[in-house]
Image (cartoon, rainbow, N blue to C red):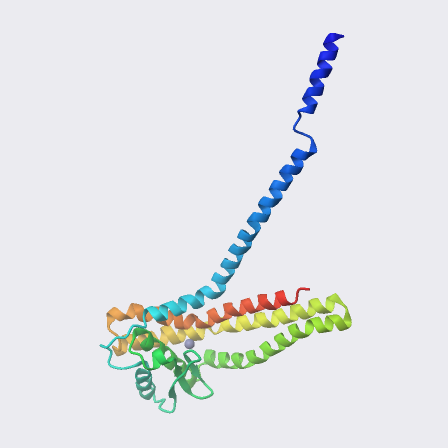
Length: 268
Ligand SMILES: [Zn+2]
């Protein structure tokens, strides 16, 4: 009997000191949840950083390349605009103007103008020379009626309408949803809007062959053969030409962020 009572007492004590009772579990669960809460902002912050790097990284890289090779070179015989004028005249394109712009270096096919930023128009640097020759190459593509250039021109013209239609659809989506009260209509509208914005990105990426042709099939051989740059400056010119060719891809990536912004705005 005594042994039986002793064994009951031992079992009772074991149960009493068992770690199973609920407060221990609650404590554990609370600690784990607060740990997750602490790591969430870190994960979100990292995701945001990666997204910003993907979207703005290329644009930052292009600006850095242009700045790195933008130092004044008094040993150069002329400015970017003077070289552009010289090359255009040599190609029989004296009707094409060379202008200063603040809207980024580009060739304007409607106005028949090579437009250069002030530092490239008036500067004597590797960046000024390479960018000027890149934009003159677009004037050559236009004058020769090259197919890829013509296709890009037509696409970019339509891009403006694609953009407006997409923005209209996405803006009207909540209004239509309130009027019709059918979630399916809203979903279809958002899908249509996003598809149209995706076309915009694809069009930008489709201009890449035109850009690569301008930089590496036209501008670089002109710089090499024409002796406009010393051999020691050619690697720097190559970097600038690569940056100039990728400007539109960088723009397309920034467009992706626009898509994300629209998507966020449409969440109720
Ligand atoms: Zn270009």
